[in-house]
Image (cartoon, rainbow, N blue to C red):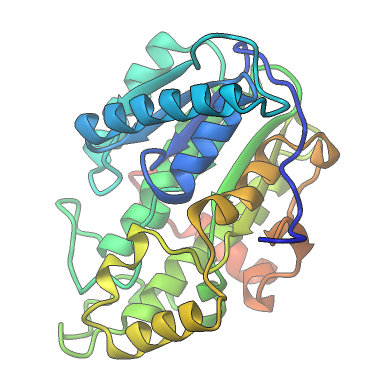
Length: 314
């Protein structure tokens, strides 16, 4: 887009380990690609090994194309350092398995990007009994973060944790007793509300974590990537109002490409300007204020203290 902010010019080392969930598609793909092209070692965590390996092959091809065009700021290596690890956020068993495997092979973790998510999903419950958007977008990441934070705390300076939230958090309400939506039928399940709830929980978690991580090497932030034309809209097709809004946003050129949406995530992840920045909510690569409800410390305390007992508190 003409006049839009550019990517941060920063050289990264393969010693810097970046983990991104859902890095095989959409803004996750573009984020993994451009951070790897700056020189970092990037681990893509997602469900499908086939799709992840296909994405990695494509990234390698695009890297060579960028180099042939003389693009500036790229690392000097012949091939990028990219890896796949299996992770299904809709299964806490899978998350635990991923954590065990990751900790057994990786001595450090510098950047954790909680990017994977689903939107406007019909009412469905996981094998663990949780509403699927709540688990994939929030709870699975909560477990991942809680178990990997000790690794980040023992890594080098300037470690960053970024949650990919959404402007949909402004539609949220806060009622933990109804967080799973089981009082609804499938017909009256409010998809936008529960999607928004999953996204506001991420921002609340950001504030909770930063209170605990004050004066440490780990800073936590969140972003809204914009209305991005990605696979995330695959559940929009049978939601009339969402389909209309999506089509309208495309007509008036409000939607972004995955690369345009990834710019904000890349900025939060690696821009030296934001070293030690905490409690930031980035929109269009700039700092914005999230919904007041997300900043309310009472709700933040409740979500921390009343969480399901299977999660170990930090």
